[in-house]
Image 1: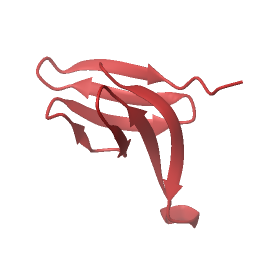
Image 2 (image 1 turned 180 degrees about the vertical axis):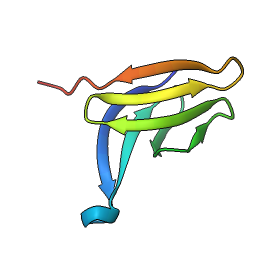
Image 3 (image 1 turned 90 degrees about the horizontal axis):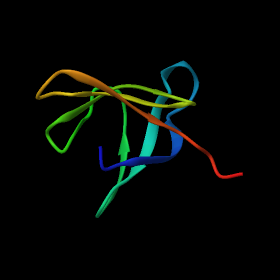
Length: 71
């Protein structure tokens, strides 16, 4: 997985707020949410305070990106 989680944010407010992750990769920064597909091969399953859970679609393998905030 060529991306790292650099932050998270919420789109909207209250119970309808959507949690999103900010990912940085080789040539771009992405904001992703549950259900998004990255590069046609990674589906975002969940965004949490500790990281992003993904599925690599070609083999249906789970992958996690841990969020390590700067001290």
